[in-house]
Length: 346
Image (cartoon, rainbow, N blue to C red; front, side, top):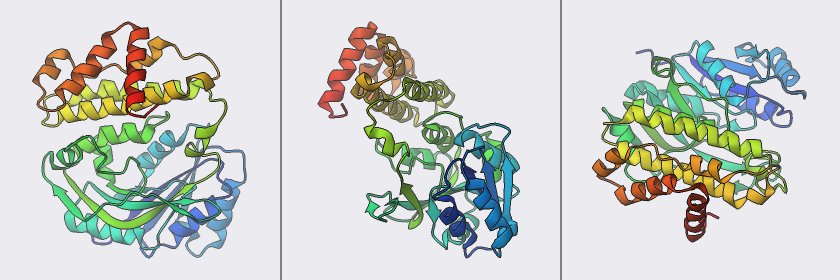
């Protein structure tokens, strides 16, 4: 195996003028020197792409920057798909254009990928507040884990309903052929990372998790996280989230019969119930009414009753949500609201 393979870094760009230079300098400053850097122009309206072009012309490693321009704005999910289609590297690594990475990120991840012949290497990250540099609670793997074999990685993730890996596409070094072979794509919708995670983890046969912090996730004004305190929220946003979750629900069926199917369905239901709680918590702030029927649809269970009765784990959890999803819409929503209040999710 090539011990110094080409690595493609995919960077979607859309209106990130205050952040893009730091992002690109962190990528161009990597200690690893066999890089292809794909900058996907998703047709923003600010000066971001001019800054990319300036670095392309002035930086000593500027020739590694390649600009790919969409014909229309498609969103971050489709921008990542563009990188998957165009990548020439043996490995593909995503960076969001308002974040930045540590100098040895690629070198560290590639060494593990080559040594263990992985489908994916996943490292730890920190959250940094834009401007102040303040660090917030971060996602760190407690120790290095090498997970190899059929269903070893899915069973590790599904050992219970907690999150044992980061819910993000960035900071993961994927084998490009792995993504293409399994036709793993991003949806051009909100919450596309969670849907991608739900799709890809079941296919992984060799993975490494690292405690090393290699990625800096920037908390910035105007980000999705920063928009939680808005007085008015477009109803279209929660409906887009519901559409993404509907895809996640439909895709559960492909895992029927796998040893972790019960836990997978439970994780999907937990994710969807959180979304329903978000909708109920902010319901009065939406720009137009969100109906009880729409919220009940979000609570639709992915498994059949006969499957649920065969589940070894979380059977009462499944039966509760299956029953709620069959109630009349107002009663289903009321039941979800009471449970959400009890859990302090509302």
